[in-house]
Image (tube, rainbow, N blue to C red; front, side, top):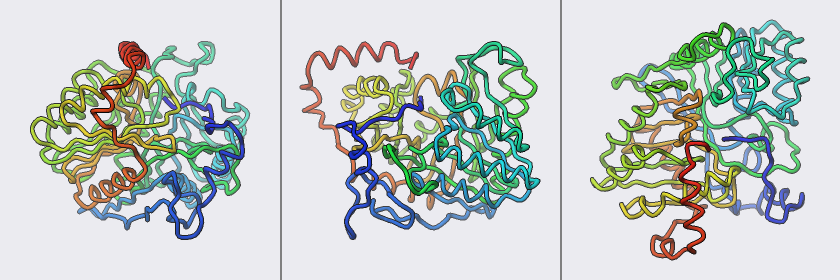
Length: 421
């Protein structure tokens, strides 16, 4: 669902956008709940310590632009291998900073592989990718939009929505962030202009668990370079006894993604906290959420109050009546574009990655998510959810039922076409 269009501040002015990224006075929280510059905790959030799993894999939770800075630093430290798979690789100042660094690493002898999505990066400067290729970066465009550019079958509907970085087979990064100024803010390129704040979540993985995500990237690379059935790019390793699993899904009729989402919701017994950028699920997933709430699970949804794809926000709101009638709490994140995609079950299991709760993620895209079975990491995620609650508006069911008839009609109409969004 991401686009390269830059959302504007209410008055559309550069000054208003600059105010969004200006640090607040010392000792005060930022009104939009974002970390405006490296070293600040002006959003009330302090990066927690890494969590170590039984197999010595360490997990680091990242919020907003600090995740992209961590990715940049990881690439800079690479010694042998860099694998990057991303939906949007923008050619703005942040994107070019990454492109320059990748080129430098390739010239120094580090094997460097990049997959970018043709549709997601449609407005990017093709010359930037050519420069990387000339520097020795192995660059592949996923499912070119132009039929004459395809090497294999033309599949314009199926997109690569994954966000994945693997370094030297021992470090990985996964989450919701693409490469562009709205995701990095001032973290990668210190001076940013005309940049609205985006709220996102990511995770760094260091140790044996990174190998799972290396395997997922290899599957994608084999598919884009050799063609064949899209199931080539599928990778699913998430046994119940494993503290870390990987779910790299593809566009197939029997993808394990919907089944896994349903199983996770069905397994909840105490709580289910979901933060979702694009919420337009099918009836089965809505029913699972409602069933969880009816059996006593506290279900909370953090959804965008401001969205870069307004139709998706309208579609999400079409579910509010049914969800709240089942006792589900709904919050709309204020002030920023919410772009995170996470779910925490019973403060024990976490799902994080590129997967939205919509038709496109489940039926049309390549997606990748990590499944973490760690109460310690889940507590950090729960704390992050509570931090977002401070900057969100809780939807009041009594007030919501009194909204104008026109709003109801628009929401109903958009929901009927949610499988196209």
